[in-house]
Length: 529
Image (cartoon, rainbow, N blue to C red; front, side):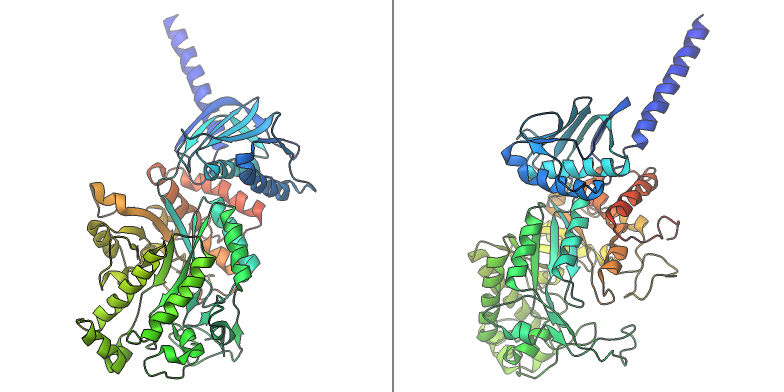
């Protein structure tokens, strides 16, 4: 008898386990939620007729969700929204972490409680994935979730190749579906100045257009296409994009490069250079010796005037000043720069860049903002209020964290999504080089090399999309997806990653991409590395 009971118990246990696993298979969400407790049976069906029950404080995330569902269902009208009834109920509660959410699903409907509107928005993103990939069947159970990192960033270079307003909005849509909350918008470089500055109309009148573009790889720069290329955003368009992102709980961090990567600005305003030399907007890639003069006060006046307009356009506390890859050859020959070095008691040209960075940092601080820059800003010394973006590896980030600076980790060998996705490169087209497969991103630990309280200064991680060889939105998406899903798990679910389940979950995520009409690379799904 005891043997029979044990056998029955074992059978029941196996059946229950199978049922639970079957339910779990229906919840392949990216990024992985922190806590999931699903019931073995039952689901709540969401259709275009399902009502969204919402109070005034959560109306915005409800409207965004309703619009996404309208596209998914192909309906003529938004899902109905009101303050009473059954369906998808959403509200805030200060007991939940600010960007966190709790989701309860039962026969009564779906209840999402967020610590803020942003928390509700992320809960709705999770719900959206389930609805889209499970034919509207949301399994009964409970999910509690919150992000690991405060800063979950993706970069977009629109200087080498320009992308219009609708492309940028589409980019934002893809990012927020992965719970990304920072867009680092690279707006100026040697190959084009892309933002209207009313004080200096020449920047876009002249600096936004180059004569032609390099054909083929940068190692063979003897070929150009002979076609003028350009584009820029008006301030009205910038405000439109900033507002679009804000409604999706994303902060846009603008980058205005200084003092290097500035040849487009030098073409528009030659007096910014040391010898006021006439240069063209650059038609190739890499690092040009033409940089802003750090010895003339007119340069600082220009930078401050530009930043005043940028501050007015972008609510972001952080303003990115670049600061990377600045050759000092022109400064060594410049009487203005040498005079500034002597007058300020500086020890050479490296210290002169540190002087420029420090002045700009003080200016931003005086206007209620904080500076963020590539890790070269450490070379001249910055205050602990500056945030460091570590790209030349993890060493700069480790050093900055140990000295008390906040750090965004974005090492080139792991986070440059303009690199190839497979070792063979077969079928990938022409890209800048390097090799970063999905698996390499997924296994990355942004805290590597740091212990204890040092880790508190790693505020986030970011992947970067440089556009030298990326000319259109389809290519952007193929380079971004599915690697962005791996980065999203690093950013949001650092401690919940599971290499045993990620491939299966990505097969579901693939269905989500297809349903949204987003292009993605096939290599990971084909098993290519």
